[in-house]
Length: 266
Picture 1 (cartoon, rainbow, N blue to C red):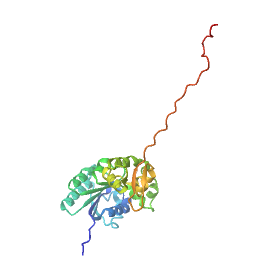
Picture 2 (spheres, rainbow, N blue to C red):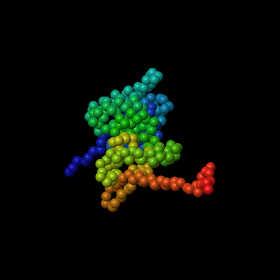
Picture 3 (tube, one colour):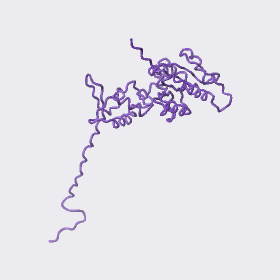
Picture 4 (cartoon, rainbow, N blue to C red):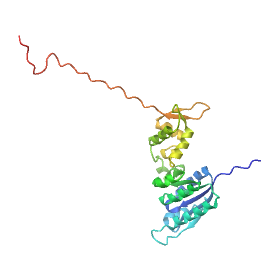
């Protein structure tokens, strides 16, 4: 009897000072798509009002709190503890990936170091997260998109509008298609999705208001679509329409004579 294939084992480390408790449900739903959250730890000063919201939902998601009192103003003991734990877990060799939940660029070097070891890093943070941290992760998910799945909170209503308009995705999709080798310009949508993830770690159709890449591509109206039965969906960039020929302005005759000319002599 073949052994059951195990889901990737993940270590989830949450920076309570830079992540809202309102994302918890969407966060762990998203992580479940990647693998199994074997370790779930959160770091912060839970006596602080900013982190207290997490205390009410720790048991629901089996998150282990790591209390760090702010003994000195301006020093973040939580960040230091998270980094120490991450390195200990990394060197244990038991994990296939790390989920770092924070909008703090201070974790850029940590993400890069984990990836140097050949381990995937998945980042979760707000859209304001600096690019350095986003690009240090294999994939980065905006936490605003995680709120879209909740329909009972006030935040869901505020997230009815996408973070960016659909046509903002057109340039990067075109760039990916251009980089892919194709004689006739047609490429499969699945391959485009994989290349997008490699080119931009934070690319997500939900950022533009769609759950599926195919729906986003249709909405942009910038691509031709081939959905032949029994074959994967293909797309290519719509050819640019040639501008209409410019009409030449013909000079009109000004009559038999010109102003100021003298009459012929007899």
